[in-house]
Structures are given as C-alpha cells and as structure tokens.
Image (cartoon, helix red, strand yellow):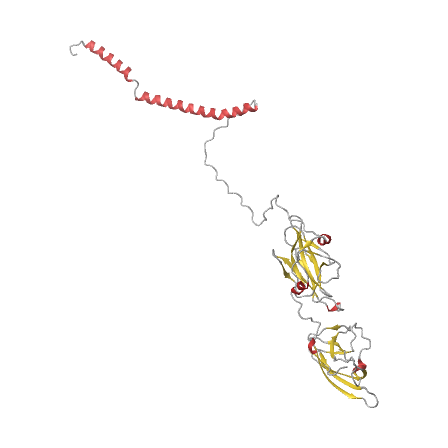
Length: 403
C-alpha cells in the first residue's frame, strides 16, 4: 500500500468509512432516543385503551336506554388511602325482644258459668276426708243449686277474669264447692282454654282446710294476683255471724302452681276471747215440813284467767229446780241473746275471781227421765252476745246426782 499513490489512499479510506457507517447502524445515543420514543407511544396506547374500556359500557347503556346525551366519563382520580369505617352502632340493651308478627297468640280463657256447667272438667284434689266421702275430681260435671252431699257444685259467686299467668290473655277463676253436711268444702280453681278451644284446668288457687274453713269471695288484681277473702269458720248450725273472722290472702301463679305471696298466713288466737275457769261446791238437804222436795245450794267460783275482761258471765244448765234464793234475783230478766242461759250476771275483770251462789228446790227422788248434768259458765259481752272460751274443758263441772 505504500507504493500506492497518496491520492488513491485517501479515496479508499473515505470509501471504507462510508460502508462501515451503513452496516453498523446508529450509535448509543440514537438507540436511547428511539427507546424513549417507543415507551411514550406504549403509555399513550394503554391510556387510550383504558378510556375505551370505561366509556364503552356507559355509551352502550345510554344507547340501550335511548339516551341521546351519553354521560361524559368521570375524571380519573388518584388512588388514596381508604377511610377507616366507623364501628356499627351497638344495639341498645334492656328493651324486650319484639315478638314476631307470626307468633301464635294465647287463647282467650274467658269462660262463662253456662260454658263451665256444660262440660266435664278435672278438679284439683279435695281434702282426704272429703274425697273419701265422695267429692270427685276426674271428669266432673259441675252442678248448681243442689242440696245433695258429696256432689261438686259451682257456687253462685261471681266469676273473675284476668291474666293470671302472664301470657297476655285472660283466664277464669271460680269457686267450686262440695257439700258434706251443713257446710261445704270449697276451692278457688283457675280455668283456661287450650289452642283447640277446650276448657282446661290451670290449678287450684287455695282450698278450705288450709288454715281456714270458708271462702267468701275472690278477685284478680291488675298484677294478675288472686285475692281471696277467707273466714276462720263456716257459718252453720245457728252459729252467729259475729263470731266469724275474715282475712284477705293473695296468691300468684309461679309457672307451676299458685302460692301465697301476700296477706296473713294464720288467724291465730281470737283476741276477743278469754279463759273462764269454774269450780263448784254443793249442799243437798231435806226441806222441813211436809214438802218432799230438797234444797240444793250450789256455790260456783269463777276465775277469769284472761287475757280480756268478761263484761258478763252466763251460767248454763244450772236450773234443775225452783229458784229459792241466792243470786237468782240478780239475773238479767230479759237477756237479748238468742241463746238463753239459766242466768246472766255481771262479769269478771281479767285476772280476778268471783263467787256465785244459787239455791233451788229440787225433787226428793229423781224422776224416770233423770240424767247427769253438766253446769257451765261462759263469757258474754255488753251486747249480750255469747263468746267461746279459750279452754272449754275447764269452764264446766259435772254434778254428781241425776235430775
């Protein structure tokens, strides 16, 4: 090449440079420029595709609705941190759970006397002696206005209706009796209806023999409790009404049975009574002369052991002959008591004693109907009303001779 002409060498070098530049392509700077250009084109294409995906459903829906003005796509918003959601408001406590509207309602337990008399019912047990006598309990057809003994009957007391078990519906309570002599055993019984409308027995509220002898009335108060007015004695056999004491006792259903929740539970001793105690001495002598009768003198010592004064004392069954002296002249001649004693005299304060003497002319020999007698003393008030004694075994004496 050194032999070549310098001019020829210059031309060959220029030709070589031109060929190399055409084969190797652009250099590093041109390549980086081309890569940046392609990235921008790709980003634009992705953005355009996203806009098309958002707008297409909106335009399609607008076309389906016939909307002539399809909505403009919303502006894109840069994602932000989602706000913390507030905790749900707690359900208030203490309020009753609402009853579902489709929950079954309790049957109406309002029953009339005629309906109760027209069906057979099961009754709670009577006292043992009453059941042995014949007061039945199973499939009983109640009667009314009957004078038969040991026949369960519906008394003429008014029925009461009220919600006694808290189910939202009324039940029925009635007084059922069973006569066993001059008086009747009684029960307060609660009745209801089942969902088929049949009359069923809920249970016994209370019965006689549980600390009292009579049931006078009953009612259901606003709370569903049953108030029963009871008496310590049942009036019969000419027993005066003023002797009866009354109480109101309250009973409530506890889900299984009725139990007393208010009122007194016992009557206790009657504060109107006192304890009289009597002893006696006597003398029986012949009457001088032709009189065949004898003179009987009895001396009674009466002690009032309390706790209250006895305004009057009445001597009973001591008149076995003709009065002939002593305290007969002081006897009340016209006592207003329906029970006429042999003699009614001024009484004895509590804690004191008095002596009373009675002289009588009695037959010399006992007659064919003569019998042994008991002389007694009892407490009377200022209204001439007789009262029982707290201890009746010590306010009478047995006379040893028959008259």
